[in-house]
Image (cartoon, rainbow, N blue to C red; front, side, top):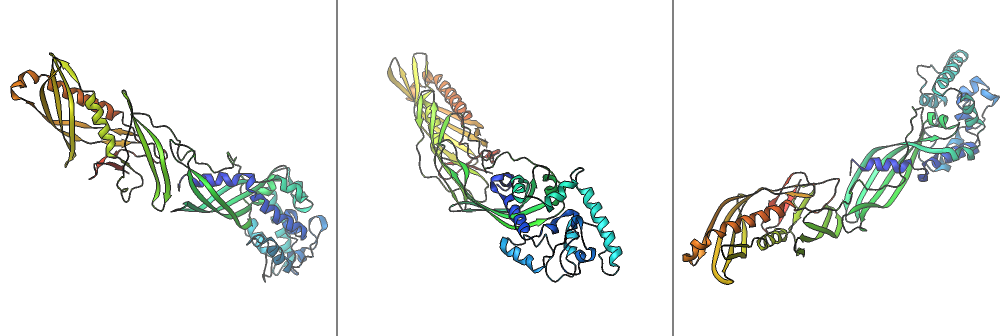
Length: 468
């Protein structure tokens, strides 16, 4: 989630429907209505209000316009916008004697002494250096557009061309709650423009700083798997700033935050078919319960459900399989182990097994032997098996070996006649077990976070559990 979600937030904010560019529009519109565009005019950046500041020193700037707006009106503009720092990072405020300094520092004019003593000489240097810097920063052929945009621009026309060009997610946190996943992120959106004025807006580097809050829940419109969806979102703008930046463009592929790559909802193919029974998000994480059916050659057999043990602690992902899965495989394997040979018909009538320490299974089954259609003898086979199985994505990788086997026949006097058929029954039984366990698929879970070579452990309840 911490890896995949930030790019999705970036794409969401890239969408014009988010209207982050409208925040810039609100700033510019207020600036226009307040006669502050002369301060933002790149070609008259030195025509700043404020008594004896550079505006008064240099007199008339480009176009012969001089703003007479007193500094206190800036705070009114900020109050009107109700956006913390909207113009605070754009314009100098407070008791600073030189209100041009903040803008000059923001524009990145290096090593330029401010006019403190030798006013005429320093002002000339500042004017020339600032214009040189701005000319080198702006693309060729749009000098007139700069003046037009920031001096005589029609704000309504400009707003139609504003868009979000790039987004960064500086910080993101997520937490599991009883109602879903709560995600909070701080973001910065770089605002650009279209048309001739677009490069100018981009170079000035309008940045909208904000906070994004998402509430993510579960999508339940699919019985095969579970996916996530955004149930609620809140995008709050906290500050607007301005700086000269290197421009770059990025296209947004989607306006919505979607989680198709979180879970591909692929059907798990194999011996079992799974359907989602229920799902929920809690402080412990995402939990999914499934119903299962066994797809045997002889027909479809439901796997009986029952209570399962708790999930393991300190695991990123885990899977618990009911003991009923193995029980169905063993029972079906026994049915496929019938043998007919030498006028004898042998079939497994009963089988029991138990898990032992050291990854071993002890199994015993009884064989009914008929001769010429009548009951003839009863065979008994005891096995010791070793097991070392793993789960890789949606498949169980079996490793079952026979460590020992022992046959007996009742009545003992029929053992010579029955002894040849008992090993054949065992061979067919083990072959069926190996074939079915090799087809044992597990629930798909979350495809973006699958189990990887997770060792299968046998719990006290005989249920199987694997975790990473």
